[in-house]
Length: 399
Image: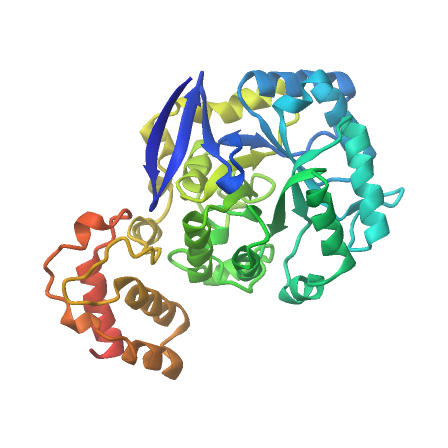
């Protein structure tokens, strides 16, 4: 096994290649995970023999990370049978707050139901531990706030203290909520819906409503940028759900909010370009499906070029997007470049407000002081045209 260090975004990340699979360290957990992982979708459509074939084939090809959110007994039993005596080879992300009511899966915060659901997961997987115990779906801020001091959160912490779960994670589709949880210091892993379309949805809007995409942002939503950068800087891993937009809709030009079809390779390349992302999870229901996804590992740069499939405005916005990481510092004129860019992006996305203007005015130095010396350009890991951004900030804020 050959190990190398690769610069990804603004953070150095351990990247290990073994055979064809590439591995990344899962945040601060120390676990090494394949960059393409398994979701549990599809395991309700197959029998136990097919499940064994699928899981065996996936493990043999380096796919060693799996999310299990579904409480469906058939799904869990199929996965448990599929793993067989290879349980320790698979790093499992299992959810706490999933319960089977006899007819369907339910999301719950009722501790007794959570215990029944989680113990059922352990039993059906024939294991006494879960690698990453996930707080299941927190999409609203009031849900996160209500969780503080709750019996539910105490149960999660007790599982961690007892070693039944080795690490704590959370799943969310809401960038504002995910960011708040990341900043709490509670979690090491965030399962988040990340793809080229969802990144262009303004925070607070529903990405499942087709009307949302009528006002798609030209670049990444600033809150998502902050989330990704915070996770990268604080060694919190993101495991990606909805890699292809949910139901593979990004692969179909008629269904895709982008109005253009992307390939699987392009979607993988997009999400894996984020410095915080450890693995992209996919729905797989056959061994042949594994081969389709693993094509990414041998794809050419041209096949991975997702920018080629997007309109120029969107591609340019992503190429030169500032993440406010401040690696460009120090500025020779003392300009806080990251903060200027953050305020500029908010002003251009949401409109210039008196509050934003006041925040800008309070900065010790302003964009208009930029001399275009270029010292910052050699230090920026994202290729941002910083002098151009400073010129634009001067136009917007007046100095």
